Length: 214
Image (tube, rainbow, N blue to C red):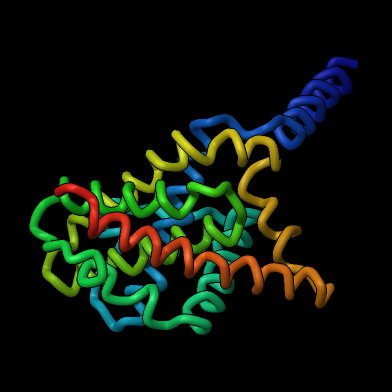
């Protein structure tokens, strides 16, 4: 009888863990882990010798978050394939020197804020991750690998302040899988069209940062 009771309690706890909404802290932590995975993939693609493990950067765990990470990378590939120049040499586009964490943080957060001025979509979220990864590649190329952690922390702070409420309404990061990864050609087309709009937001953000008072 006691064993049956314990089994029932355990089952209830398991179902509660699956049913409950993610906390703000979990969403931020997951967002940073996704960023680390995205950055690591882009650094490897660029042939840059750098390990996130050596710098205390853990990646997403197995399961649904690993699937989200893979989805982000596939969508990021689509964005960069459509406009390869947009997400490369970002530091040069922003006309910033990667010698100060403050300059880097200010530039990234200014661009992020401008990208989301007109609202939040998954296309814009993936676009932001591509920007973060592009900046990380610039940092490592310019012998500033420690600044990669600054970018991850900045993105985490932006998630906390701007994206958490939106993410909670959608049930968390896993929502991206069902929203943009579908066999329905209409949904796929919608993702591509909405993504194309992001380029305008990004370029506007670059211009905004360059023209603002420094």
